[in-house]
Amino acid sequence: MQEELKTLGVPSNRVHEVIILASVVEKEVRFADDFYKAARVFQNRLDINMALQSDATVSYGVGGNTFTTSKADRSDKNLYNTYLYPGLPIGPISSPGSRAIDAVMNPAPGKWLYFVSVNLETGETVFTETYEQHLKAVAQWLKWMKENPGYE
Image 1: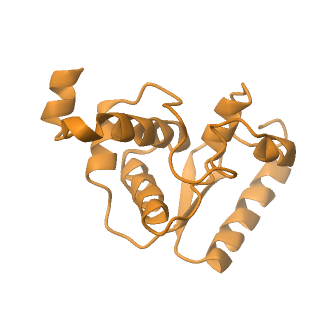
Image 2: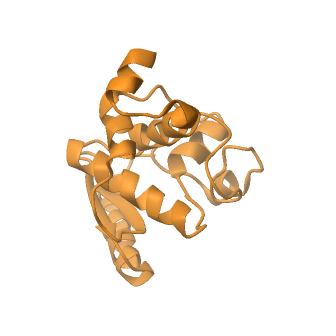
C-alpha cells in the first residue's frame, strides 16, 4: 500500500488525510470522471471552511449503508457526521481505490460546491457552483425518487 501511495504522489505527511477524503469520494460517486469532480467539491469546501455535508459519512456513522439519509441521521452526533462537524471525518469510511486517491491528489478544475446524484440507478450526478443551482438538481433527484420507489 505504501508503494502505491508513493506512486500516486501522496506525500508521507498527508497519507491519513488523503485516505480519509479518498474514502469519502469512493462512496459518493460511481463514474471515473465524477471521482475527480467530487474530490474538487470537497477540496473547495475545505478551502472555505464549509462543511463537507457528505451523506456517505453520515450513513457510515449511524451504521447504515444507504444512498439517502434522514434528518435524524444528519442530526446524529457521531463523529463521522460531516453535517455537524467541520473538516474531515475522524477516519476513513471505506477502503479507497487508486482512482479515488488519484482524484484527491489531482481534483478536476472547477468551482463546484455541490453535487447530487439525480438518478440512483445510473449514478448520474449533477455538479453545481451555487446553492440555487443545487436546489434545482435536488428537485431532479426528488422527482426521480418519487418515480422510483424502493431506493434508499
